[in-house]
Length: 287
Image 1: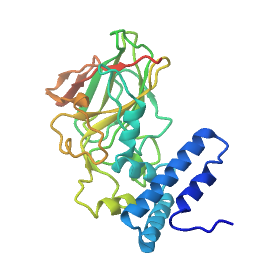
Image 2: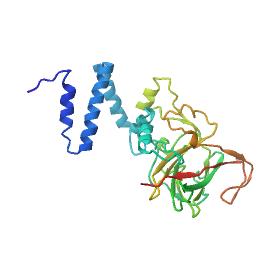
Image 3: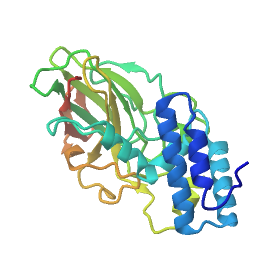
Image 4: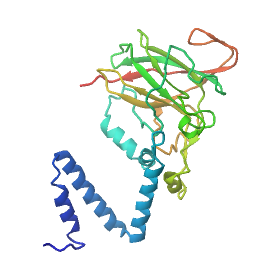
C-alpha cells in the first residue's frame, strides 16, 4: 500500500482518473485534477476556505431550476463562457461574432410572423429591428429561424417574475425568401445580473460592476451553417465597456434611431414615436 503524502497525492489522483473508459473523459479529468491541485498549492487553500467553496457550490445548485441557471451565470461572470465561445467559434472575420447564451434562454418560444409584436403590449418605446440573414458570399438565407429573447423595461426576464409563467418578450421569426426579417418589440434596458444568489453574493464582495448593457439575444440555427448565438447592443448604452459577462463586441453595437409616428418597416404604421434598428446577420457555412 502506498501512503498518501502532500507530494504524491496529485500523481495518485491523476493515475486513478486516467482509468476513465472514455479517452476524452480521462484527458479532461486528469487535467482538472492537476489544475485544482496546483491552485490549492498556489493559494495555500485553508480548510475553512475549502468548506466555504463547498457551501457556495451547494447553494448554487440549490437555487438553480428549469428557469434559473446559476452555474451558467457563474461561468459567465468568471469569463469562462466567453472563453469557451471564442475557442469553439473561430469564425471568418466577416461573419457575425458569437457571444454567450446566458442563463435566460428558454425552449419553446412562440413563432411570430414578419413584423409581429413580441412585446404584446408591454410598456416601453416600440422598437423595430430589421435586416437580413445571409452567408459570407452575400447570398440570402431563406427560412432561417431567429430565436429572440430580451429583458423588459425593468431589466427583468419572465423567469425572474414570480407571477409570470408563460413566454414573455421572446419569439421565433423566420426569414423570408430574400433573407429578410423584421421583429417588433420594446427598447431593452440595461440590467443587473441576479444579485440574490451565490453568484451575486460573490460579485458583491468586489468592485465589479454587476450590470449588463441594453441588448437583445439571438440564436440562429440553420442547417448547413455554423450555429450562431449572439447579442445586439444599443449604441451609447451604459456598461458597454464593463459588461459583467464579457459579452460586448464592437461589431454587435447597433444604433437605435428615433422615428416620428408614421410608416414602419413591417409595412404598417405607428401612432407614437418609435425606434428603428437595422442589422444584417452573416452566417458561416459549415465545413
